[in-house]
Image (cartoon, rainbow, N blue to C red; front, side, top):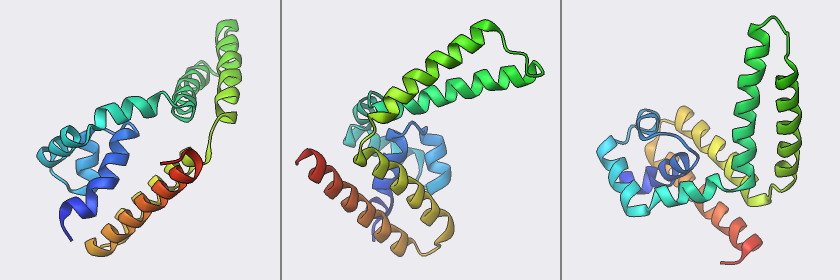
Length: 150
């Protein structure tokens, strides 16, 4: 199995989900040169932009903002300003609205991404890991087609 067959879909998914090429290279062992080539050929940047517009991705960003706010509150010995309370309230409300908009394909992306990372960490047989990656990509494609058409 070629490197492209074994790693391409995992690398693409990680990039689309806002991982940088350096992190992807470290976790998969694919060189930065190869990743840059794949990114260019596959138009990964556009896919990333589309993903980041999705309600699921926006809800994840809100989680990050809320975590930063909570860290600041904890650092201040739990003392919350009125502005921080207002921000958390508003962010929570928006996140709840966005989360209710989540769809099956978005959830499948999250689960398959985590499962793929698990396989890469635990399975040393590259051929097997590559086959699992291809199966996950096909599974996602079928879910997407079933929910949105081809």
